[in-house]
Image (cartoon, rainbow, N blue to C red; front, side, top):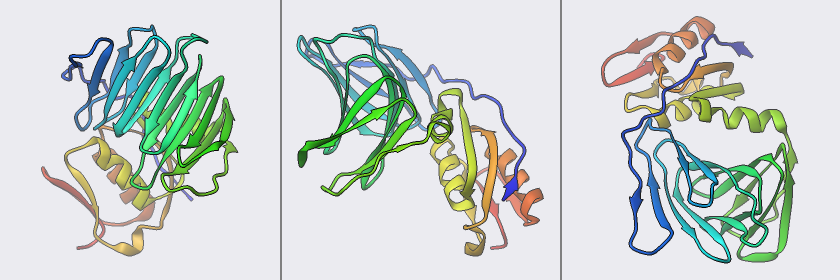
Length: 238
């Protein structure tokens, strides 16, 4: 494993704005690439919204529904036993009463990570088999009905939720994975010119808005060429 130097915080952008939809107690939250937002909801819950994310909030009298259309969000849920708080990501559901958890959409499924309390997770195509997650637990649920396996991994949960402080945390992750994570937050993309470098494992904490710092650390750790210009960052020889 290679240890990389880096770290810090990214300032959350205030450029975005909530779009209030016509129906009562409905709200759409959106962020642009590189924008992070922390939004108080009308039920006193808080939604932390990651880069390039869209979600719809519908707070009803009997249930609080969040539809994660794309991207990722973390919710600090205000306790209300009479109104479950349910996050929808395609066929995946995550239900809580008063807790804190994150949900991230992928092309083939959704990941749920619990910071506090207990969350029930299931696939609507297999509604009779909910998975119960406690704090420190995580699970990936495919959109297609398949067996799922939850794990207790508090350190992994903490690293994957580091985006709330504007950081990317790597722990024996591949260069391919790291580049994809940085590209979520930046218009100047990292390109891995040499495919053989993609499997190199890396460790480190970095500011999500500083892909150039990450690339320079890769240069030092792996002794590979790095070229940085105004439009992209190339790692390896083209």
